[in-house]
Length: 111
Image (cartoon, rainbow, N blue to C red; front, top):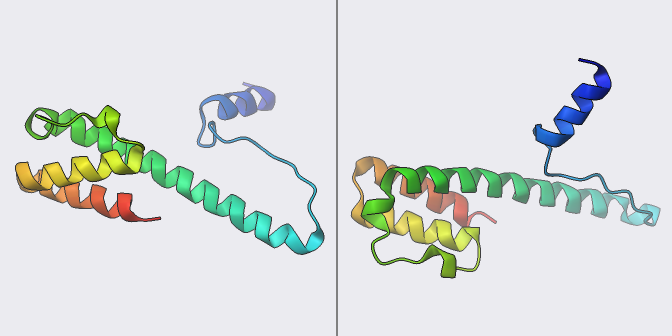
C-alpha cells in the first residue's frame, strides 16, 4: 500500500475521518482565539462520539428494562438522550446499569 493510499484510507475511516481541514485568514492577534475555538470544537466532538458509544452500549444491554415508556426520538440532542437513559438505568437497572448510568450522566453533563 502506497503512502497516498494510506492517507486516503485514513481520511475515509481513520481517527479523524469525520473532521475536515479548514483554512481561514484572520488577524494575527486573533490567531490564538481561533486555535482555542478549534480545540474546543474537537474536544466536544470527541466527547460526543464517546457519549454516543456509551449510549449505544447501554441501549443494547438494557433497552428492554429502561425504555418502557420513553421515546428518545423526541429529545432534542444526544446529551438530553444520554441523561434520560442514564437516569432510567440508575432507577430501574441492576448494579452494573447503575455504574454505566453514572458514567453516562457524568459525561453528558460535561460541557
